[in-house]
Length: 295
Image (cartoon, rainbow, N blue to C red):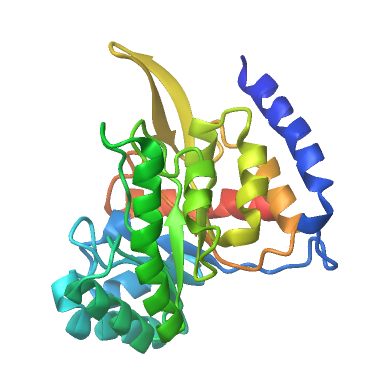
C-alpha cells in the first residue's frame, strides 16, 4: 500500500467517524487548543534555559518529565525542583501543562509527586506504562491494572487532578490497541487518555479512526509524532521521522477540530533531532507543520 492509498483509506474512515453525533461540537472548528512541547529532547537544560527555548519555539507551555528516566525533575527532588521549574515558566507567561511521571500505583513517593504537582498548579498528570507478562491470563492482568489505577484515581480526585494514560505501540504494552486500556479506565472519571496518534497509527494502520472514536470522550491530551515503516535486517520497524514526512494522517486534526475537544496538543519528538541549533530548528519546523494542519 502506498502512502497516498493509506491516507485515502484513513480519510474514508474519518468520514464515518465524523458523522457520530456524540463527537460533534456546536462550535465546530472554533476551538483554540494550547499547543505545547514535551521536554524530553532537552531535559538537561536548566529551568531558565528550558523556558527560554520554549518561548523561542512559540509553544504555550510544556509537558515536563518528573521521572527517573529522561526527567527534568527527579521524583525524589520534586518538592524542591518542581517549584523552580514552575516559576521559570511563570515569569515568561507560560505554564507546565502536563507532568509526566512513572506512576502506576500509589506509594509514599508517588503520593509526594502527586501532591507536589497539585501544589504547583499543574492540573494534568501522565501516568507510567503497564506491560503484559507471559502469565497470568490477560484478563486477570487487566483487572489488576484497573485495581491499581483505582487507588491513583482516588488521590487525584482528592487533589483536583486529572490523570492521563498514553497509548504506546509495542508487543507487550497495555493500551497499544486502545480497547484494553479503555476497559481498565472507563469507570474512572479522573483518568483519561493522552491519545497518541503516532502510536495509534503504528498499531492501527487502518483502524485508528475507530480507536480514536472510542477514546475521544476521555481525551485529556493529544500527542503527536510521525513515523514510516522501514525494512531492515530484522524485518519491518517503525522509524520516527519529522512531522509531515511519515504515515500520520493530517485529517486526524481536521476531525479533532470538529469535535468539542479543548485540551492540549503536545508535540513529541523521537527521531534523531540533534542538539543546539539543529534541535531548535526541528522543534520549530514541526510546530509550523502542526499549525498548518490545525488551520
